[in-house]
Length: 309
Ligand code: TUI
Image (tube, rainbow, N blue to C red):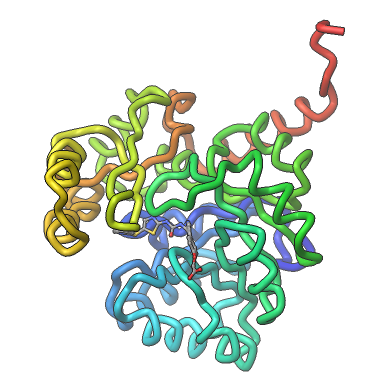
């Protein structure tokens, strides 16, 4: 991708508590764009992750700023001071930070959940946009990848990256057909050796069908997709009883860390996209990216050629 100076059109999702220097450097070394999740890190922890990533790769990488973080502004400052090549943003409007990114020469790709937001981001100077459909894991919007990507591609002139539900080369080919120049992949990268998430988290994804990820929190305006477990059942019960955002937030806070770092996949939040239904093995990042590219090419070469007509 010319914009990002990367060899292959694969961006790794900036998954909080999961995407650290180990995964990010492996993806960049394999020719994609590795992304460190700033998530809820302290600013100095983020700086350390950036330094570690630079020790492991001399290729471009990114930092994801999760805009719900109360410390988002400080994390933006660290990304700018460290002159990271690319920032992706999620779960909010990065408008207030766009000027700072521009001043420091940081390329910005906001995640958008609608064509309107994509248009606003382009006007504010975004270098590209990531159109993330609601098949994705974690914090999600309302529109599917199949509908969102072409709508966003029609709405802007900057490059569009498709995300949500992309876990193999067939889905990559589909994303290109919908008008995307590249893909962002999250859940599939969790099932790699270089990903430092707890083994139990990876096993839950490997054993999940496409029906296991459920959405909780819709009643509070903060819908999150994660694998059905004790935690999602408790949240569903609270929502049925009419609990508000604060009450649900109390049991959700720290839940992602509990699952991804401590391996408590029953009481923690196992955020994952619907694509987990087709994930069957753990691979090295290099092996996975090689398979994705090969399958995408094969799919494009045989498009529509399966004997139906
Ligand atoms: O950000 C994500 N996915 C995430 S963030 C996250 S961490 C978390 N932890 C606990 C509770 C909640 C989150 C886990 N997963 N994806 C990017 C994304 N952004 N998807 C959808 C959006 C989005 C939605 C609406 C971005 C902007 C938006 O509207 C902003 C506005 O102000 O109009």
